[in-house]
Length: 188
Image: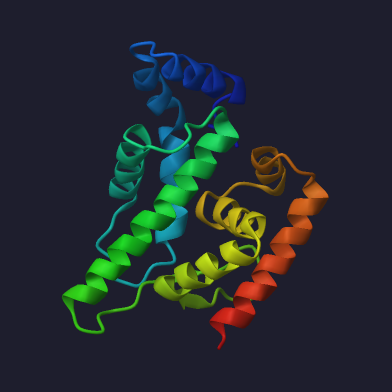
């Protein structure tokens, strides 16, 4: 991608942020903001018509959760987008739960499981997807992480391999297995 910041620049700013350098976070956000919005727009494109959550709000909420997070802080660009993917998933699920709670049996949030498949995207209930991913995580955490990174963060096979510190062949195999497993679970 032409507008993608250099991984080294992002890593250096993350390191400076962790070391408490004032202003590092202020310099980091503009570097990754456009890419985070692209990821958010891609995820929201598969939501149901009339969805009230906008890409900007999704990015901002993920950023607030990242900055205030209690978990391990990302050390490089791949880890930053991995954390952002997990946070975006949580935000979308929270949003779907609030909508469902506000209307008894409320509207279902739909997303496409894989936009890279040549067949038409099949929408799925994001709450059902979240339940399936939770079950997948219990069975094999890495398979779940691959789905989060590929689907929610929009990372490539190579970027996912870097984030998980595994080979691209492993990610390709895990991506195939996890999609098949999720398809079977969500088709029930």
